[in-house]
Amino acid sequence: MALKGLDIFKVLPKTNCKKCGSPTCMAFAMKVAQGGIELEKCPDISAEALAQLSEASAPPMKSLTIGAGEGEYKLGGETVLFRHDKTFVSKSLYAVEVCQDCVDERLPQIKTIDYERIGERMIVDLIAVEYKGDKAAFLDTVKKAQGAGRTLILEVSDADAAKEAVELVKAGKPLLNGANESNWEAFNKIATDAGVVLGVSAKDLDSLYETVQKLEGAGNKNLILDVGSASVKDAFANTVQIRRAALKDGDRSFGYPSIVNLAKLAPNDPVQQLALASIFTLKYGSIIVLSSMTYAQALPLYGLRQNIYTDPQKPMKMEPKVYPVNGADENAVCAITVDFALTYFVVNGELERSGVPVNFIVADAGGYSVLTSWAAGKFSAGLIAKFFKEADIEGKVKNRTLIIPGKVAVLKGELEENLQGWKILVGPNEAVGLVKYLKDLK
Ligand code: SF4
Image (cartoon, rainbow, N blue to C red; front, side, top):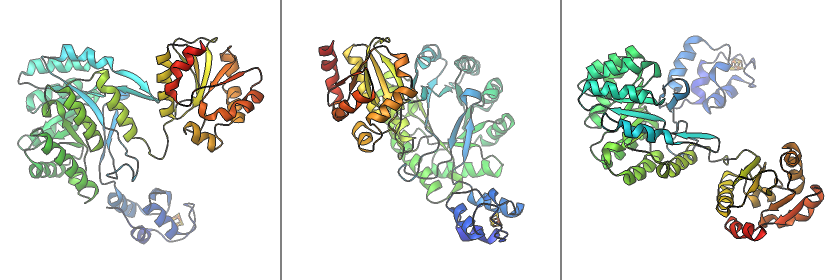
């Protein structure tokens, strides 16, 4: 539960010494309660009070880490149910499931998903290795999956096979997903000995709650809750109920990230899996396991995730620079737009479709769309000229023809004054007109 300013004030030394930067202890307490400053900023607070308040002010949902090195991911730590209340903290992770029968076919497919979009690398984050009753084959599959360089999920409820698999790959900090009502003690020992996060499942929510409490009682709070695979309806209801119990009701026994296995909920139906993955990205799948991942699936899904897990107050921005399109060299015509990511993708798509080589210049315009940035004075002739100088556009491109968006045709005259030696052309009002415009220009 969130702490109130008064609760915090009660344990402060109350010397109003201002060492924390606040004028009074009460002002400091109110700031801490609002999350604006950390309690530790008061150097005079006692260790007991700090420990007591840290426990009470701990976030309602645990933050966990799985994986190691480049494959390390944060899970959980969410504080709100809706992204318009506050930015979500840990993005959903996507996993592809492999087993002894399909591992050779799926691993190469997994590696093909690797691209960058708005500064974020998009890959299959995790590989889930499924145990199918044959320990030797399972261990062999784990070794093969390990070679793909992704963090692993070990989907196994047989303690003997789990122990050996964890031993093989524990340095990579996999998620061991296999504890349930009957085997939790053995799995707790395997997971805690290896220092890995443990996935817990149960026949229903009540049993899951009880099993989590038993594990917590045994000292394990490194848990991920498996929402089950009885039906899509149950899995979704469980996922939402678990998150609401943690964040709305402050029930910390459900304050853990969740894992949902769509490969089991919608087997052999990649289209349904994709639709469900979108839903669970919104509500509230921390790890989403699919049976495959192709570009056609990845593009919309990863795009959705990027939108959901970014600050809605901050527009997504492209890096301001020259992007050569269709093999453009320094002699290709130039076209300019703003750094708002959506504008970039729409315009870039049309430029590519034209087949005409273009030096596509993305200017620093505060991340706003063309008209908004122009109205806000962030896409003016003076600022564009300044950006040309700072980014050394004239040193990079020899061509001196610049196409500007039709909606800011008003900039033409001023740009001609500010960019000496450049011929300014007014492009179409909408990006969709670029293909014809460029072909006619050619
Ligand atoms: Fe009060 Fe501590 Fe801030 Fe000093 S540093 S004003 S004692 S809260």
